[in-house]
Length: 312
Ligand code: GH3
Ligand code: MG
Ligand code: MG
Ligand code: MG
Image 1 (tube, protein in one colour):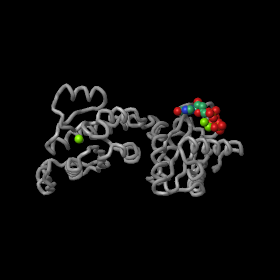
Image 2 (cartoon, protein in one colour; image 1 turned 120 degrees about the vertical axis):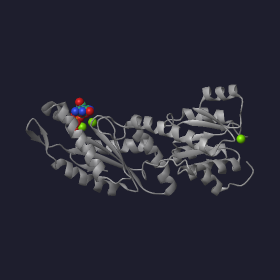
Image 3 (tube, protein in one colour; image 1 turned 135 degrees about the vertical axis):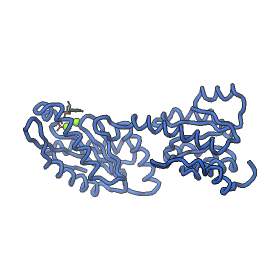
Image 4 (cartoon, protein in one colour; image 1 turned 90 degrees about the horizontal axis):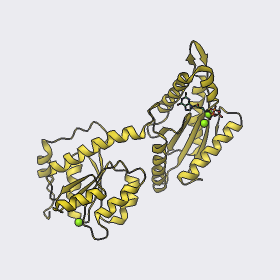
């Protein structure tokens, strides 16, 4: 692969092979020590509509992984600083990357070496040089499946919101991003007031409907860039990007007012429910642990001060 990339030729080759992009573009991280190889594979995938991040130096991998959030990792086996297999083993250990497929793309032809590499870590072994269509289809199949499984893994069954694990992961990622871009970020924890009493008085099914209505309201009223999750039973969490604590409090307080006026129904009985909310700003609490602790503390303050309120 020494000749320069001829994108016209590549487009011709890929032309009859358009990948239907019905969803977010696939994000592929390529790790290879050869610039030419990297650029060629990146061009193939980019021309197929994917978003590609190429990494040549293995020491840059960890930082890129957390920030780029790939759907799939393509990894070379033979690299000077660290073998691709060793790197794949390390990547496999990282929280939140368990469901990200790792695919080797190597000149290694020996079947036993390939099998061994896959046993240690990795989901597939592609051999270079590779036909562009073969590369695109291998990546596409893997990513589709991984996204499907991941969609089931990260969602809460009752509300369809992100679950606890997913919210924690995303919080970590958003903190890294906001540090890099120097943008504000707030974390809000919401807890339904006297929810045990709602269940006891109106039944568990009515309680579930209250939770669903709150989930729906949060999704409708917050921006598309805000990340909403169900943190626990009757607790919700919101990651508010580009938003400092006073701004976040204002937004959630509006939602609090709307929610407190909703009429819920159970067996022809009408009732109202409120929530309390605690908010913390990463300006003062710059990591996942401290920002969630601070939000939790603010939430307890809101409860202590009488509930149905937002506290920072
Ligand atoms: P506080 O105002 O202090 O938050 O009081 P609370 O009653 O809301 O708090 P507590 O933590 O004592 O009770 C939470 C209740 O939420 C207890 C539990 O049975 C109920 N719960 C948790 N998950 C679900 C669920 O998925 N559906 C329903 N219907 N209830 C749930
Ligand atoms: Mg190499
Ligand atoms: Mg609670
Ligand atoms: Mg509660």
